[in-house]
Length: 496
Image 1 (tube, rainbow, N blue to C red):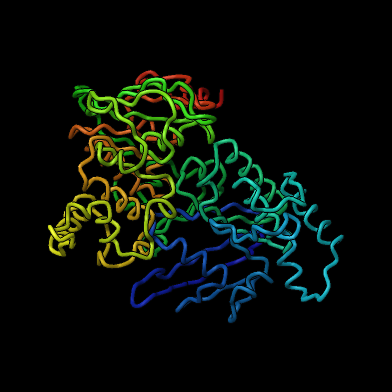
Image 2 (cartoon, helix red, strand yellow; image 1 turned 60 degrees about the vertical axis):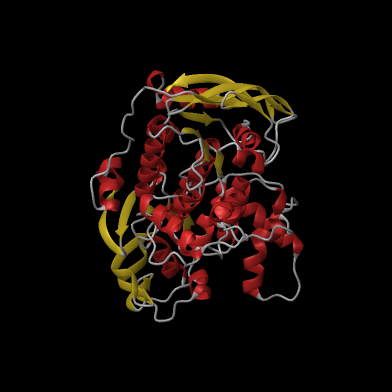
């Protein structure tokens, strides 16, 4: 790794409408190093990355590149200096080919009136070779997997002469195998003297790839050092400002009556002969790689993609769950994996998002929603789930990932479901919110709810679940208890 300083921030501060997003942050990034920004949602990580990219101008402090203070620092300046950010949406053109996407920014910067297509393909080919991944240059990006789109975004940055690439939550939608491929790409970038800023809530990935960690809390840098100086407990404590217990508290082994029994459940091409039971107080985990059938199972139980064979028995009665309305009527709630596109009405207020599944209970005889009842319901769940917001009338888009997940939980818990299906309950949330959500799951089970947790996060499954179903090719291939399995053995079952 080179020891040459590439970019330095000195005493950078940034406020938005009087709210301090960053306060007196100084840091240095060397060429060829992998640096992690760690912190809870709202800690200032995203604002810091936007400062690096020239998207946000600091109110105070200086930006120094290659030893020279830059008084003018906007996105174009950052790109010319080799600083690029890969955001979670990748900012690719889905209707253009891989080669066109990789070369687009380069061609745009050259302001050419005519495109030399041979050069476009050669540049794209060379950029992909640098990351060590082969992708058909003529494939439309819309046809690529999430992992391949990410590689295209990285290759595009390299084709544009990137010397520092910031990756914001790059592994959120990736399988474990794809995560390992991405980490291998990052190691190749490091070997080529490209600096990488890696932002992730998944601490095992941070420890696997980062050489140095900078911890932010409430907009301030509170810790910095080589990765070897931290462990999960100390890093979490720095991020939260308090002691952190990674695992949910143990619960009583006593269980109530059977709430749900599934026998031979199937759906053409998606599920085959799935059977299990769920009792009051159970937390049942369902895991498997993408395409294993775990998502199809959730959608079948909630009526989004109904099963075409098998039995669903709820409360001792055979039921047909043909639509979400059927599921809701039967006391089943569902928190989807993608809260942004499936779980929330982002432009609408927090209060409306919580109340939307409860309008029948909030309306009078004339069908008019009672404002007083709605406020009471919203206040109850904002307090119960410790939802952090200055005003419940703000749009849901204004919240951090952890608080957005609390809103979706509140919506369903307000209906008092007997069975709650949580698909990826802590994807994209910070370590503190993750611990809080695990605590909520444990509390719901203690209160007699049956909870199904669908996740590929093995530590999460072992933290909250009593039993875990392993799925592959639409079938359940194993069922294990938490006490009889380790992270390593469960990972082996998933890979097998």
